[in-house]
Length: 163
Image 1 (cartoon, rainbow, N blue to C red):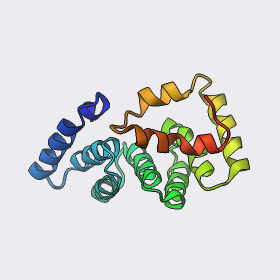
Image 2 (tube, rainbow, N blue to C red):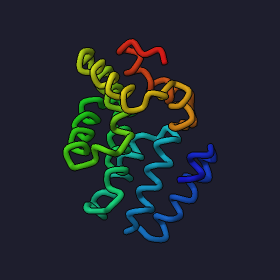
Image 3 (cartoon, rainbow, N blue to C red):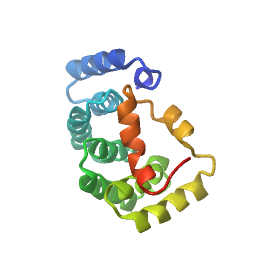
């Protein structure tokens, strides 16, 4: 996961695949591979790996992280409805304090054309994270491909975001 965050995408994929090969029942291995695939632009594979991680350890303490990333993987795959459905489940499951769903909530709503709801969610995001900006997002969500980052931010732009 660290390799993906510092831009060593191929190493992240290779290490995570090796982890899964060594222990196919590893929640962490599948979760890490899903994480690496997400930032590498391999969203369908990210979905598959994250769903496997959830099946392997459905009560894991880190489950909100994995479910949130799963929702974002569906978003990046273009399935905004499924992304919103999973995000709602994550939120209802007690992950309200976990920050990533709060950040991506308005993006999902913007892509679905739910502009009024999206703008309210964007106001909440700004209230909870007043320093949030496109530049902060760029340093937080380090996609390998610029086009993926642009897609990630597209829903906010549909809400009038210029940050």
